[in-house]
Image 1 (cartoon, rainbow, N blue to C red):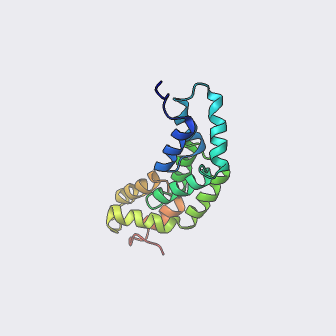
Image 2 (tube, one colour):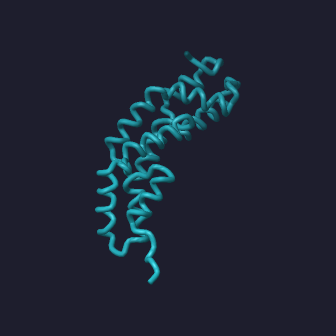
Image 3 (cartoon, rainbow, N blue to C red):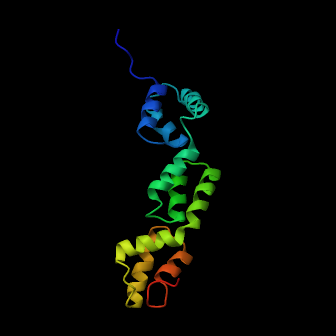
Length: 153
């Protein structure tokens, strides 16, 4: 008799071997393969107990990969949509907020070559770019600024 295929635990471990997943994200992926939705939670509990599954670790990895390009607000939104708990989000975004101006400046320089806006329309364009990336209004004001040199610091 042929094997029925990988177990939920084996599928979960294989997914976690590729990259970190949030608990909610992994549950959603495993739901396709579960005979009964109730069998998913014990698998996730076991993986968390064995420290193979961690929302905190997922949040840190996601912040690391998105941190250079996006602001704390965008990072927070991304983590919330992936089902990460509020406490883990707060810890990760606190660190992101601490370096937000520097990261906004780096994204601005990469996109606009460090060229100060020559007009109000250009300043608005640059501010919209940074706003779309989830940077705070304070970071945007400090980077795009109103002094004509593109930086207030």
